[in-house]
Length: 77
Image 1: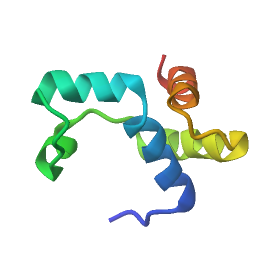
Image 2 (image 1 turned 180 degrees about the vertical axis):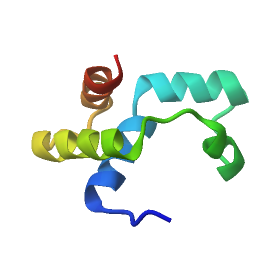
Image 3 (image 1 turned 135 degrees about the horizontal axis):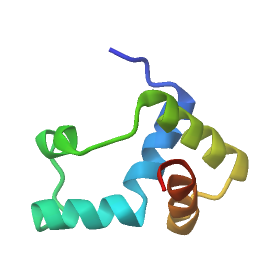
Image 4 (image 1 turned 60 degrees about the vertical axis):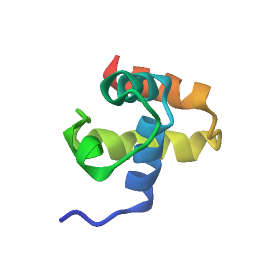
């Protein structure tokens, strides 16, 4: 099990606050009700990439959905 560092938590915030993941989840599930089984089946970048996205978000100090989209596109686009 991986320790949840601050960078990892912010990186996960980038993913789950992005438009891409929101739309993907709504198409997959048909609602905004979230459960752990569905989250566990969602494709995600590797931990190093998630931590780097978290570092970018922490440096920017902008938690907006738009900024999360920009960060995600920079790493996965």
